[in-house]
Amino acid sequence: MDEIRSDWRGRARKAWPVAAIAVASALVAVGLSRLVFPFLSINNDEPINRFFAEAIADGVLFPPTFDLPDAFRPWLAAVRGDHFVMKYTPVVQSMMAASLLLTGGFSLYLGLLAAALTAMTYLLARELLGNRREALLACALFAFSPLVLVQSALLLSYLPTLLLLEVFVWGLLRGLRHDPRWPLALSGLCFGLAFFARSYDALVFGAPFLIWALLGRMGRRPGIRDAAAFSTPAAIVGALFLLFNRAATGDMLTPPFFLLEPDDTLGFGTRRLYPTDTPRAFGLRQGLSGVFWHGMLLNAWVAGGTLLLMLAAVTLVRRRFDPHVWPLVAVAFLLPFSYVFFWGPWNASVLWGGSRYVGPFYFVPVLLPVAVLGARALLDLHRWRPRAAIGAGIAIVLLSGAVMSRVISDNIAFTADQRALHELVSSRPADALVFAGLPTPFLMHPAAVISNRWDLANDPLYAVDQGLSNWEVLERFPERTPYRLQLAANFSEPRQPFNARLDELNLAAGETVEMRLRSRTTLPSSTVTVVVSALGVTREFAIAEPAGPLDETVVLDFRGAGLKGRQPSVDITQSGEAALDVELFTETQDGSPGTSLGKVQAPLRLAGGRLEVLVPTGRTWVHGSMPAGPLELSVRQ
Image (cartoon, rainbow, N blue to C red; front, side, top):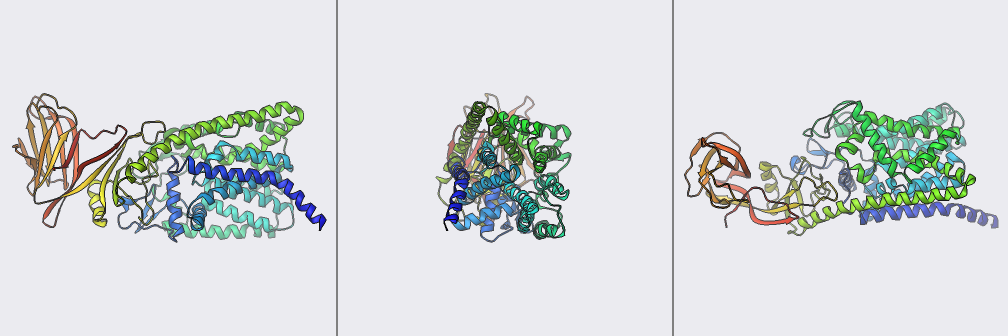
């Protein structure tokens, strides 16, 4: 009994430093999530994953469109039949859903993920290096890298996929070095899940280790039973992957990633995220540029930055590692090289730029070999020059702290904008229906605040502002008060002034509807022309030498629209959309409309023998200096 107790005490003494790092990692992940990212981050994949996790927690794999796919479509979701197909597979989101079911939130998921990743990094480094001190140092260097700290607070798939790949490598090593085959089964299961979650990363990361194992360089050469132990669970998960693809896209070999936009794929050519996105020419130069700038970011986001990279390079040049570490070294070079052929890093680092705030996330797996090789170099330096090693350790802490300070500051600035947007909308009545004017035909972009639950059971309720299509949303939710939200174009740029405008809308109805038309600026002293179009009738009204801003009454009836008390100079009947359009022009010398001074549009329709127009009431809430348009159309009080 005394020997057992002594053995347990010894194990506890050896385990407590790893446990301390794991607990610290979990606390940092949860703390950053709540304090720095309460409204999620600049990466709009986060609200996708939250949305999908909420649906999975409620037993829904393909959220319904509610027959209004264009109004409620989540960011980058495809429409298939009567449901949405999310861009990503449900592996990581299922982990998040489990946390939701158990606790009602994501803190449990984030904390356990950070702790498990820390512990698994230690176990893998211990298996690769064969030295507890080196493994502990590698674990600390990995866990406290700014990239890991920030990503551990986000609802993204990069760290959970890396955790699965670490278990895959650890199980492969343990299974081929010892007789029990259960580690091989665990390895195969985790490799299959990693492939299900992020197929490209799993193949690039896993290939060197699988080749090394087949060559017999990880222990014994695998036999038939070893292959069966590994491949059976991997094949089961692979079959689930194919079945999910078939359910999602109709084709087992087509993952949902490519369903919305086939040009969002590997290789060179025209690339874009969604059908109406701006096409981008992606070639070798762009691929190299993306990898270069992603790598430059990694230079800062790894613990100690360039210093740790140099230490890892010293270990590599000296070949101060066992042969079974070579596959991990291969990953450090193979993974960045493989991303030359995918436009993601170029888009993230050059076009979008969001990786400056949440890190070079495509290169997360590269942190593992850097930490392992760097740990060995640091301890070698400590044996040779203890003071130099201590100085290097202090420098690593200071450099990482400086990077984290800047990153936290930038993200707090973005969170302040998200909070201001949330307060701007949530301070309205709970039954608000907010039509958001967005730069893309999706919710969740550019702000995670502008999103719904999968079942639309949230207040306020958001819909994409699509003009005439708004009528269908209003019919579905007649009890809600409609609003229109407009954001400044620079919303996604942290440290830029946040400007937004929220207008209350009103359904003006009747056989005749009168609305107020005002200009926000003083008009030129020369004649101006107001062009009014409705119900296929276009009329022009010349206003000579207007005094100050324009202030007129638009009258709408079944014959079209005009200005009250004024006679049109031009009256044209033509086909057109069922919308009310008003545009203001300067007048040229020949009397024809010249430069446009502003335009305003209001959805219009004929319903039940009356006219219905959706126009602002005049009640407006503004954050910052978001100006109204040059022209304003509102209900005539």
